Image: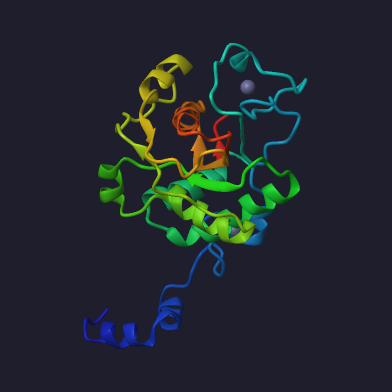
Length: 237
Ligand SMILES: [Zn+2]
Ligand SMILES: [Zn+2]
């Protein structure tokens, strides 16, 4: 494009930009919404019965084998979707492609999930990034989700009380649960007592082993939280 045209376009604002670069659905590419209703309806849902602790599908609805001996600090984890297909794409775009506009429809999906099956929580806390990672990325995707969800659900968000002290190395998909837990154990501290006696709902984009959420829960309970549940958009099954 002619560089002289750009300032003119910028003056016209969002409408002109939308005409030049129409928004496309990240799932099917159709022009219009960033996540169209057909793609939202076909997202891979996690259906009950679930393991009451980790929230993975479990036929009997009792503790799954992986949770029987898990000394968890977290009271439970729930996720509406599997980390597959369009949901995987959505999380990736939100996290690494700076597609912050996705936070709005994704938070609505979380709110829909909460309104059909409420979880104990009177305050939302996003899983923090290490400050180095936050500087690189410029935003915390979990913070964006929590902020939007807080508005929809009418819940306050406390996002600067849980601190990530260590920058955990990326978790290999093949690593076992013990490795993952030692990778993040003690990685978080709760800086003050604002969450004392509060029922906390921890918000994150994806949960893999649950170790990160559990390490957060441990810190929050040391800080006096009454209960800590984890709500993530998606989880690896
Ligand atoms: Zn679509
Ligand atoms: Zn389980």
